[in-house]
Image (cartoon, rainbow, N blue to C red):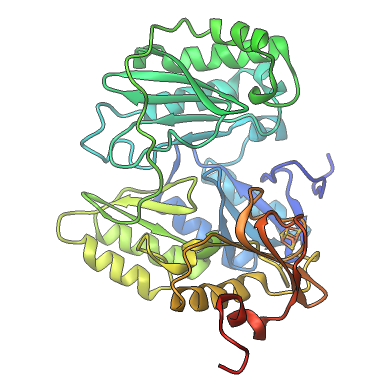
Length: 407
Ligand code: SF4
């Protein structure tokens, strides 16, 4: 097996790292959407000891260790195996793409705990080798409703609590199409049956690329009852959330010391684990009266605890020096730009990219800066591939909001 790949379009794993500008990236997939505090602490130590201490929170609710080298991989894999995070082969690792509602089992407004469903799906994906033929990015989502829902995130197969049942949806070109409901006890089995049905009609691509006839064949495997209501749209919320807190990492990047700090805060607040989310934020339960202190400490550690933090308005990839395709410090410049934009009350979406590839965001943004030769292409209302208005240097950022350079 080739241990390292830089083939685009694949997600890096523990068994198949991906090369990047700062070394190898290893993606660690949690089971059931959470890492125990012991595991999270061990991952922080591994990131600092074997990598460069940088940790990514991904949009598929995984965690990535960065800056690894080939000679460190055997030790890393041994340690991750001890933590129960090493899959037997690359196929098993690649197929375990299950996102789980971050407050599952913590939010009293959820009708039931969806984690057993997610674990049953994960177990089936692991043990049923026929499912290892699923396309690499084929993913499933299990949502519990309540204060924070992930039901509006995109996944090939979606299960989302509506009352005492689960709504069942498939991804289409227009987003999730909710097709019917089923009892929680049948949900995992139905999701796996649908995954098999997908393989009967396609071995590549994604659910959203199927014809209507093919979708109908796939859907039939789930044996659904009529819909009784749509899942709540939900979305990211940060700060104090009843008996839990939500804390985001700027641009999805945690440092090992920040992860250790989160583990300590979570332990002191009585939490059992750290929950990952597709919003590059972590969640954990807090005992009564401890949440405010936790959030203050997290803010002091450089993390984001409020929805109105200006950094959340900006998407940015790592840029230089982490990515060899970039000539600009995209994240450092994105922070500077976020501060200036906030001063001017700018509310539009901003994307700062290290190069024209635009890894951090594929959708258009109101304001786009794409790095080139130490400066940025200025693009508006488009993706990084849109028409270039002009080149702009960091020292000119304030001119984007009406100031002159001498102001
Ligand atoms: S957008 Fe360019 S610089 Fe940024 S991570 Fe992707 S390839 Fe690297």
